[in-house]
Image (cartoon, rainbow, N blue to C red; front, side):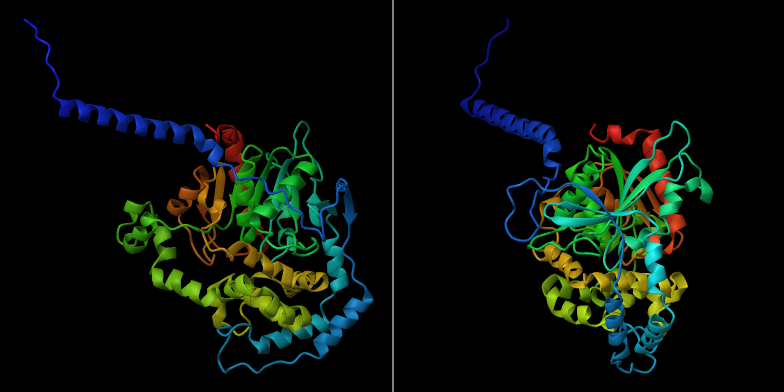
Length: 480
């Protein structure tokens, strides 16, 4: 015969408590599952960066043709300053260990004065169509190159390419024809691009913000508005250096509009316990942390290949994050000082071993014409101070403290890891931020200025990434 049993008060209390715990956990689980998508979108930053108060009238959204022009007075002033430059004798056998070696700098300045033809380089710059349009109160300069021809029934894919510091839109001039006319360069015609290369506000011929707090999210919002203004509701993005962060933020702001994100540099702004453990043990147990043999080779010994590089190479970043205007005054006043400051980065960031050469290895990957064209863009536009301020706006509140640092990226992502990049980030680290990495390649050669150094290698990696995204329609699955 079955008898009902009464539960003890203590047992009943425990059951109720257990039920409450499950209810709380279940509620939290449902909350995170259903609120996740909203949390992963970065708010669009609608700012006003023009002078004074924002006008009540609607902003002029017209797109105006632009050409680089330099007055004779500007060139006369430049040559006068070059003639009056004061050089400091370098230490014996110092090569580029102390920065730009003035023995080689004299040779560069001599070439600048006597052989470099800026007017000819202006024609090169103006070979591609350039425009300006006002967004959020400031003029935005951009290069916009359409394909010379398209196969019947095929549409060009819009690609936004964003430079960094101390580079410029000119970095992309050698890769543009490989993307807009790949068939003529042996790269096939399955994917043809319409390339848009803007100058970051405060760089080159984009107007500098007149107010504080213009950071990478601000730039991403401006470029998002630019792409919409050009009629592109879906597009690809590509970037390195500052362009890495701006394009990442753009993918966080408009994930339904960015079909794919391609990067030739990534950084980790938040280190967790797994990162620290992989730093300590990854050299000995690489498989445990998802490291490949090439990751180990590029990262270890960690003290030499990470910490030493940070201490020896990032002093400029501390200056530009704290007091950019102070050092910028000297650079904006002296073309030789500006050249020394920028050339040193093109030496060490292309290959750290170039510091062991008296000429910094500068002409092993670049021509003096290309290097001086980039420097002249900074000189004639007077943008060195405003370009350096971008570091302060992005880093003054600390690394890893901003909202975008805490959000992941869901957009299909391709990463080209060049061997001479300043710091190597393994895929195992990158995927904690970029949760949809569909392409990660160890590139055979090249450094920080990928499009400038190795345009064909970078173009091929972009093409294979886009091919994968398109064939598998990955952008349609990114929200699933």
